[in-house]
Amino acid sequence: MADADAPQIAYGLQGVVIDDTHICKIDGEVGKLYYYGYSIEDLAEHCSYEEVVYLLLKGELPNAEQLAQLKKELGAARGLPYGVRDVIKSAPKTSIPMDVLRTAASALALTDPAPADNTEQGRYNKAIRLIAQFPEIVAADYRTRRGQEPIAPDPELGHAANFLYMLHGEKPGDQAARTMDCALVLHAEHSFNASTFTARVIAATLSDMYSSITGAVGALKGPLHGGANEGVIKNLIDIGEPANIKSWLDDKFATKGFRLMGFGHRVYKVLDPRARILKKFSERVGAEAGTTKWFEMSDAIEKAMLEREKPLYPNVDFYSASTYYMMELPPEVFTPIFAVSRVAGWAAHVIEQQANNKLIRPKAHYIGELDKPFKPIDER
Ligand code: COA
Image 1 (cartoon, protein in one colour):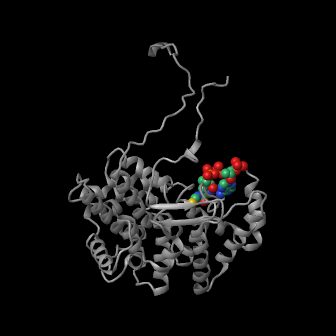
Image 2 (cartoon, rainbow, N blue to C red; image 1 turned 90 degrees about the horizontal axis):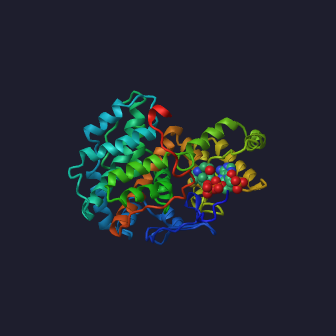
Image 3 (cartoon, rainbow, N blue to C red; image 1 turned 135 degrees about the horizontal axis):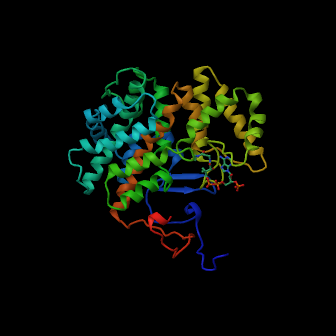
């Protein structure tokens, strides 16, 4: 029977505006993205990840002195605590890298010198610590599961270059370092997406930065969110050759509910501006690696998807997958790399949420029975 009093439900909170924010603006109708008012195109072209971290945490771009100070703080926060190393070492080799990252993020709280300090400065210190530690956790886990020793950070290297160095054990060339740096800039922030919203919900209970970020890692892991980039490369490998694209897509779309990873978006109704930038990287990195196959296949899939009856555009995860793959990064670190970048955005939102806090607690429309006759256990 229809419930005449049924409220209007915003499934998936679609279209619901729940707060003001200064951090990020997405215009999904025209495909524009801004961090604190700066366009993603300008940030990607001109800024390092560290400058974007400063922007997200402080609300303005740093001058040279402020940037040097931030780099000093990030450098001082490097070096995995023993407890976190033990978490990584004790994880079975079969464990999922995002599970290790989530557990290690939580374990970081246990080695914080002032875990209960939730002042403005305390939140900032925790943010710096998490941003500095995430690349180390991901790299240490990557090497440990291969039977290799983790590599200590190199104080001479910037955030992106140092991350690649700790993964591969070799200092990256300028081009590889710049590509990773730009990928980190592009993934750093994206308004009230699922993982950021998770972080804000946790922060809104006045819980701490580590709890918020640990929850956010768990939300990012899902294939409808950050986990999609791993799915993209699996699909490319499965398709194998450009000639197979059309039949592969037709086959898959014949199954009801099929989702093509790296396509579609809740907010963008046109091309995701980050995908446009990453597409250029995918092409360039492929050419440098001497194999343009993955880029060309990605480009052909994009075109095929736009020709379908219900066209879909690629999102950020689509071209990052082929870019990383051609940088010799294995698919299981693709989503952790997303987290290595996004941790800055999450931290910025925790800080913003707690600066003007309101508990986040929506209501539900109950559709079960009421006043059921209670039976004691031996009568059920
Ligand atoms: N593959 C196939 N169909 C898709 C699709 C995709 N990637 N993305 C959206 N659609 C279709 C849905 O089936 C739905 O069709 P319908 O109206 O006929 O039922 C319609 O487009 C709207 O999709 P919906 O799931 O309601 O939109 P959403 O805003 O809830 O979902 C995503 C957004 C991102 C979860 C969705 O686009 C998706 O699953 N993408 C693949 C995963 C991915 O790349 N995630 C990373 C996002 S950055």
